[in-house]
Length: 95
Length: 251
Picture 1: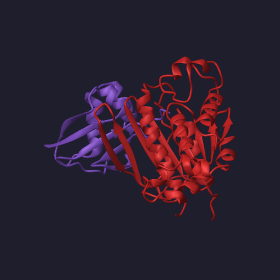
Picture 2: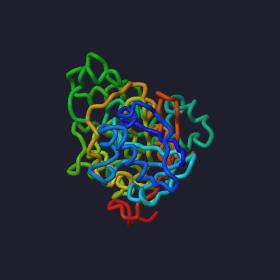
Picture 3: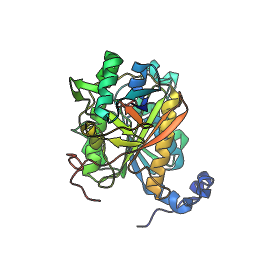
Picture 4: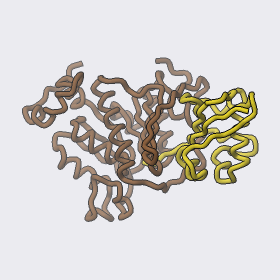
């Protein structure tokens, strides 16, 4: 198993109720697997900010791994390691 | 390019900021020659406008339709209770002229969209994007990139703020970050005035740096902060080669 940290920003933080938490995944897990796990375990309010439809990650969700943005299209190819920090940032436009 | 000289009154007004290293009188003259479009004039855009006016940016173009409402006032530093029910843009302009009569303030009593944004962007050197809807932000972004003008995008939600600087051909644009207009964003959002002011103040300083040509702009990074946790971070962001707006643009 690997252990990583997930940071929730903006509406996802509101939906999840915490700013960050640790998460466990099998060795060799990808970013896509993390999103699937989060959507499956934290309810519809969290899931809707992660997925636009079944299997389709919200195209405008910003995701960073260790401070570098990763395209949602790369989520299936992005391997995660123990100690990684994954930041999930729904778009905001308050002005 | 030669920049306009400062009058004795301007020398006095800006004396303390001209002491800033690398800015000086040259930076002040560059600000005097510069123009900025700000849309809209809410808690964020209004505070950006206030700082740019007091800093001496020569011409400000403010865009925002509609009248001031009582529930705008928790975050409006340019407007007062007596202004409720009046066009907000006029209240803002009046206050800015009081703050600094040496700055030209122009008002546009409409919101920006694809039909008018190109015209207003063409009248300025730099764009500040502070609209509460992505459709407006994306329209400003496309016009700014098309016209090769820098754009500072500042946004907030709850106790969080974010800032991105778009330098067309050199940094990601908003379409690189948001390939689709975000469907879940709601027009009304939780906001403290102090949070809106924070991102606005950072944005204003970014604008001043870009116009005066000093310091290091926020290139290829997104600044994000959360005042609930008192945490600040930058995220490295990259251009999207297939971005329909800037993908083909060279530096």
